[in-house]
Every structure is written in C-alpha cells, then in structure tokens.
Image 1 (tube, rainbow, N blue to C red):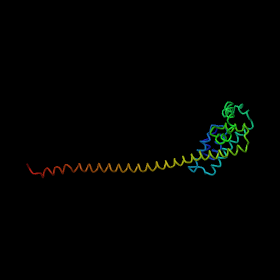
Image 2 (tube, rainbow, N blue to C red):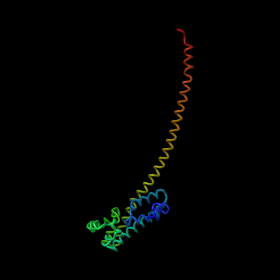
Image 3 (tube, helix red, strand yellow):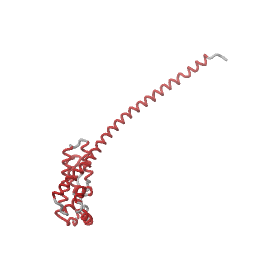
Image 4 (cartoon, rainbow, N blue to C red):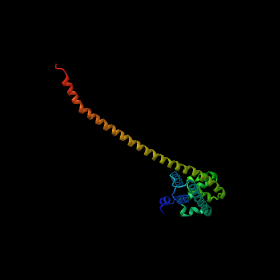
Length: 211
C-alpha cells in the first residue's frame, strides 16, 4: 500500500478523500481520525474549509455507498468471500440481522461508529436506496460536525499553546536577566561594603579616648 501519510502531506484533499473511501470499505483507516485530521489541517490554514468539507463529505458518501451496493449485489453470499471476512463474519451478520430490521434508522444514522459492517448489512437486507442515502447524508453531517469540529478546536488550542509557551519563554528569559542583574548588584555592593568596613572600624578605634 502506498505511503498514505505522504499522500496527505503533498495532496491533502485527495489524500483525505482516499482515506475516507478506504476506511468506508473496511481498510484500517478510522473515519473519525481522518475527519479530525481534516479539522486540524483547516485550523492551520493548510486546506480551505469549504473545499475540505466538500471533499470529506464526498469521500464519506462514496465509501458508504460502495460497501452498501456490494451488500446489495452479493447478498448473503458476501460472508463466503474471504475479502469480506474481516469486515463481516457469518456470526456477526446473524447477530446484526436480528436487531437491524427493528432499528434501521438508528443503525444507519450511528452505524458508522460500529464499522463498515453495518452499511454492508444494510445492503444485504436491501434497505431502499433513497432511504439509505438520506439517512447516510444526515449521519455524515453529524460525524463531520463532531470530528472535524474537534480537530479544528484541537488545532487552534495547539496554536494558542505554542503562543503561550513562546510568551512564557520570553517572560522567563526577562525574569532570569533581572534576577541575574539583581544578584550581581547584590554581590557588588556587598564587596564594596566589605572593603570600607575595616577602614571605618579602625578610624573609630583611633579616635576613641584612652581608658
């Protein structure tokens, strides 16, 4: 597999799109982390917010629809294909089927947090295409708002922290200079006092009356 980090670094929009599509069809690229990365890049003005949001939204829908249509095409045969075993095992398919029909809306809206297998099951059970698309669009907006927003706020916090650290360093340097100057002045006046003390003491002894 090509170096994804290098792809995102040199082609951020395309890299984010690829990560979301691959993550949507079962590759180990967590969608939430990719969306947070998008927000982080936005906070540092590496990518433009409007273009980035369009790209990630398109990437999410593409990955979701690909896995959904694969489920519709192969049906229950999908669990016999080795390539899908790590996404959906026969046991997990049976488990999801028992609850999916009763909670279709819940699973489609929040299923992305459970993995690609949920959308694959939606295809296997032949959920109406337009219904799936509408719910998936709402789900995508919710995920983008949550994770991209978190990444953006995190990136801004890092920038503020860097500025605060720089400000603290400047004040720290200034304080160190002041303390050093105060210490040197203290040593200087202490040395002068020690120099003049014997002379003044001797003068007092010479001027004192004899007993």
